[in-house]
Image (cartoon, rainbow, N blue to C red; front, side):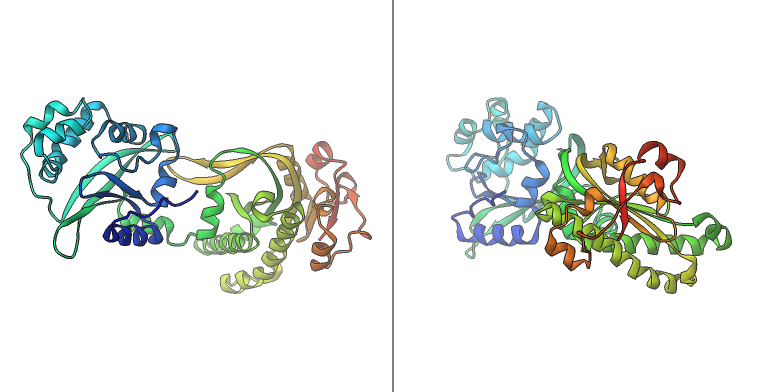
Length: 393
């Protein structure tokens, strides 16, 4: 998505550039209340709901085009638009050349009858605003402040509409402070579910039940949190996207569209496994658990036609995938006892010679074993994926 051009007015252009670079939700109006600029983050959050949601540069805030734009993006009835005009119309009237008659000509016909009710008021330095918007098909509240922007000589240059979700900043910080911004951007690309090619990583802690019984609940919880955080860091650092967490297990995806090639996706998947293995010693030390008691099983598989997307609910946001390869990856992971990492032939043979060499794998000499023939094969593996060829990595 390209950024909108900066306003011609130097004062508004300075504000637009700063707000856009800082990642704010913000819209700028000029001194005549015409749409002048909108930040990239605002446009990304509001999405594209068709021609009516295209940012109408040059249109008056309360014109027919402006009202149509708001109706496409904001929740509320036509009466709520009238209430909005009653609240802010006095400030618009005070700054409209030609006064009442000109404003009546400019505004949407459904608002024109209200112009006679308005009494002009000087625009103060800031005004609060609380409304509801449509986000991902759901109505959500947002709060905003309309800030007066003046030129150096005190003349009105325009108005800045800067907003945020309705929740308080302390709540936003708690939700986002530990988020990896690169990972957030990767997840944003999965807003529309679709068929995608990906390397799949599944990992789970072996013998977790005896460990949980031996440790205090508080100690085991702290250990589990450290382990999941370490896994997520390794996945993200290798270029992956974290999927669901279940108990002591984690799922991750290394997408071709993100990493650039099938080989890069397969290599990143294996790299994440090796980095997580290396990190386990630190998790063990910090949790005061002997490393000999900790063992992770890994299943690595290739998903050529997985249907992947992000699921957002009132309580959480996560990436999930559907397809036979997900069940097969789970069978690989369950058979990888003893801290092994079992990778399918389908994944290994995606590696180019260069990437295989970087991983220390001689793909021309590797031998594979059908899953059903492994001594550690589970009943489910023999039933669901007996012929999948695997090797250790």
